Image (tube, rainbow, N blue to C red):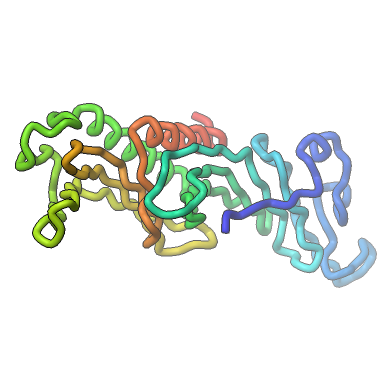
Length: 244
């Protein structure tokens, strides 16, 4: 499921100084039901809302380590029809969790199947650069969409999946080399993004797709413009967290 922040305190309220439940002056919250006069009171450091926060969760009053969670504006990229029944939208969203006075930020990349990866800023930028590079490869294709001959392989092809021996009406798939990007967010470890250019030859011609796979999920098929839109969303998210 795509993570959703259910906020009870808007950024404007936070910056205007309106306190959330359990907040005290000086940026601390009392945990475990203690009051300021309790000798065993534990104090949680509450950091100011980041500039990009549009919705957030308050700190858990029962957890002295929890400083609250933040969600940025969600960017959605509508993609074309997919080979599996899903909502054809890719989401990119900023998130952060404050813990013990430190802010842990990441960028969610959510596939149409709702499989998602948590990316650091370098991982998001590497993913964006890979999407742009493969989109450029799409644009520079040598063999046009209308086949001159079925044996003409695209110059980037690294693997065939020829099933015509079993089914003469089936298409021939060409696969480019997959770019594998390891990603490891605060809640999802050992994940991986795989991106590659693919083509399918049929009697009607050649169709190109950019395959984006989140972990071991079904690949999402993108066009070059869609890949660039996702790349732009990732780069913008990275700039929001860490401006140049």
